[in-house]
Image (cartoon, rainbow, N blue to C red; front, side):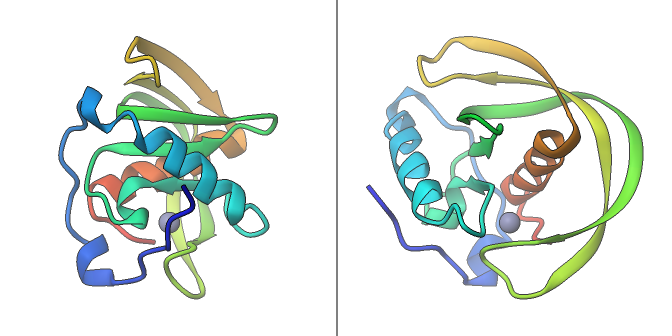
Length: 136
Ligand SMILES: [Zn+2]
């Protein structure tokens, strides 16, 4: 289901709690909401649709990937960049890494590890920040 985008910075600045199997339905809501906003949005965290659980979606180019309880287990090649956010106006400077390693649970609740580079890696770091209540 397409959900409204939360723009309340007080809500967005709170950190999210661990997701469980009961939160698997969020994969579809995130997919539908990202699809509805794809003109100006490449990723989303669950708190942006009002649910403070550790779930994100990242546009990987050909498809979107939903990750439950994602954890960055490695990072390298820092660079400075500027980002904007669907929940905020304008863009802000931030430090990102070209290459990151992640572990997460997929939409079948299987544990996965993944290495991302380039733009998908950057999107993912932005969404991971959302889980900590960090808004760029
Ligand atoms: Zn954002």
